[in-house]
Length: 132
Image (cartoon, rainbow, N blue to C red):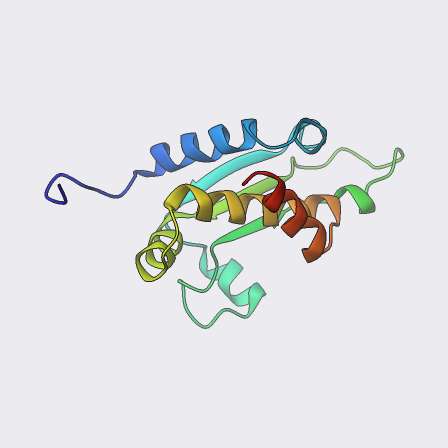
């Protein structure tokens, strides 16, 4: 069985993230309009420095942009909000824990979207628990 198993590619993980996003509660999902999801193997050196990460495996995901609580109707045009998922750190985490890859990606996605909304960790945990 394991001889044919392989880690998902960047494109496959991005598809997985979009599929998981489509399964989130509708009210939560509707607020995500315009948020772009991207998957890279690792964060950039600038991101690692900015986040104070000790290793390229320290970050599983990142929200970049202006969260909803900080936006106003008078804002000037800005770059779209992005959610980055980092494939190699996620795969490393998956290898070390007894969770499915889909559940890990869902957790990271909810956590990063939660930053967009300004949600507390408790709010994000409740959303995730409602999906089990």
